[in-house]
Length: 485
Ligand code: AMP
Ligand code: MG
Image (cartoon, rainbow, N blue to C red; front, top):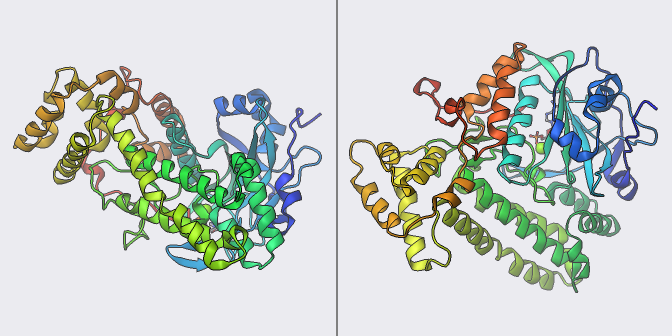
């Protein structure tokens, strides 16, 4: 059997046919597997050796599918940079179907760059090698940091050129997610005015992601609540590692609470809340420090779609949803505070009136001195063990303000072991990602593999990986990322 027993379910296509356009991946002139995520393949119960073979690569490009598979382009809408687009959808992507893991969980197997669909809106439906490898690297880094995320299973070069600013080698990304349901999926379903469709979508989301909501008196309000909680936790985790998503449109906000769509994203080095990387985000809408506010805004858009399910009377529905939405801020803050306490190794139960000013004063010092966010906390762990000079050196010629802070903090007897478990030494730093992508595009995958090796064990500092723990050299310059990838 050519498909090696791979079974792709069609639950989404079956339960929500109004949101699924049957479609086929474009042929691939000259497929060449660039990277295969072996640990992920094993988790999914797929045989890595088979995936490397012709039928496996056929699956990873959507060109050889197991019997019964129903690939579809998914419909969704979305607010992009605040403006509503009623019809976005998978313009260059396909849901191949749902895999069932050995543990019995469902995972979407999805392609990006598999050719234009009816949602392509003039786009070519293709993807370039660089951005797809970038999604692979950053997703693996996020996963290793314990942050919920979609993950790349493989990137296959197609042998087809893609026209961007220049002609680039094309690729197909095979992506795995708990699902591809987005706030934008609900916006699209709500806009059809078909209450049956909206209800089916909500029930599908509850069954797949938030089954405990089915037990609640008001299951749709409970669904909203569960998504608020998941996203509050997710954004707090982003903030704790300095991650800037870059394009937090409602179509890039999942119902599962996973990070999705690594386009113009990047990790902040010098700490500053106004940090923006995306070349098109001139207003700083999706700046580092704005991310919680934007997520709250996106969740308000989600709530709007659910109102008819929450209560027949609209005013009552709004009042109910508002109470839950207002919990986003406190939930986010609680997750952020707990994470920050761990980053600082603070003793359990430390009073809020000690911890809060300590954290706020530190943030102000980091911003004023534009300190490298990631290496700061790692070096602070050394300071907890008595070796204070490496971290002091980050505050320039006049570290007096930091010295005061350091004395206050050390008096609390911070726990260095806790700190080392939550403060990564290695993250996918922008200059390292660019270096790996440039080499890979020119045919050398060694730097990519080395970088992935570093970031897959982010807390485990190892000899030979010193440069992966360092900020970008001065000559790397101000970093920008680009949309339309
Ligand atoms: P993204 O910014 O990647 O989240 O994509 C936003 C929307 O643009 C989605 O509807 C995509 O399917 C669509 N899109 C992005 N790039 C392309 C492309 N090259 N061809 C067709 N559609 C695209
Ligand atoms: Mg997207």
